Image (cartoon, rainbow, N blue to C red; front, side, top):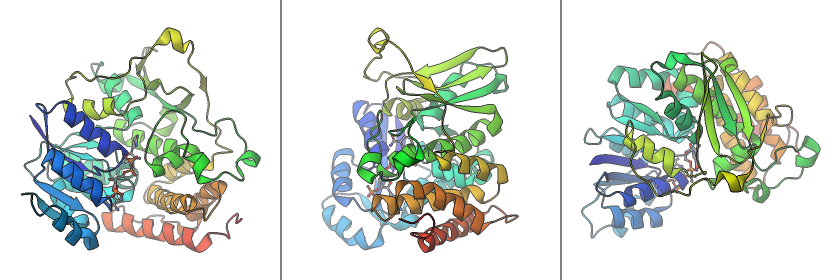
Length: 389
Ligand code: NDP
């Protein structure tokens, strides 16, 4: 029986993680649930899974959550502090971080510093925290297990090698998103509703927009560099339209290993929970004969500026990935509220990188949060000016 705290339990990954736990109650015990504002769903989840702790990130929702759960013996907490407290609870065998955005960084560090194994869906914490996150894991000995489907695929492939240094190249797959093949002129008038229609995956709003702009692939490239100790030149992004191949590794002898399956995040979630073992999970099998073919291509970095911005940010190093990430989070939020156009997201991300310029500043938690804030301020100040509509 593994005791697992689920951070971001009301989101797309959180809900699927709870489904994994629901299907194997003899294997997984949910110890804590956290959300931001959706306390109605959080209450339902507490009633079903009976965790010891429940947290809302919003202190103003604390009284309402306490009131809703007053008949239960669950301990109610609030704020980022509350989330970090449950992340650092030494009683857990594992923490799943499925919070969206840089809000996940402090809980990631809290879990790893406490020495608790971390199943990481929150890619933004590795993109911004980078070496800080890896160092926390190294120092405490906690395992950092990727949940992102591509990184889980690479991680799964590596399990078959005698030594991870036998990997010469990573082939990071991308679906290409809803606008694959389109040029800038065709993307001028794209609205949130169109960008939210991902061809293969049903995910939270932020990552779905990131998939449409290819920011997601840029964030994943940085994530892969950190997780697998590779340089960007050793990682090739391959468009795999059907999202059947979740990523591949090429070994030093030229052999290529792939992890495949129908798009279903419960597979990487459960693998992170049970690693290094595998346990049964009812999933839709891939019918290769019916599928007929797999389609490959390459990403278009001239149309999708965010991918190139992430590569440049990683090349510059230091706090640049935090700037790019913060600018993107702010821009996506504005796009979702119809305040800026689709193409402005990439322009604002590049603009923030050129304007904030955090060269030579040490990567500490405080400086990451400052760089994030400066990038967001840049985006807010330049909305409607940079490439304005
Ligand atoms: P969702 O938006 O669906 O869910 C996000 C979760 O985080 C919700 O529980 C939300 O609470 C909570 N949350 C939001 N803001 C805060 C905050 N400021 N403080 C604390 N909690 C907060 O996101 P996804 O599940 O799609 O994605 C989660 C993470 O996993 C992201 O980093 C994403 O990139 C990554 N990921 C997601 C995949 C997917 O298939 N969805 C695939 C691979 C990676 P509330 O509901 O109350 O708003």
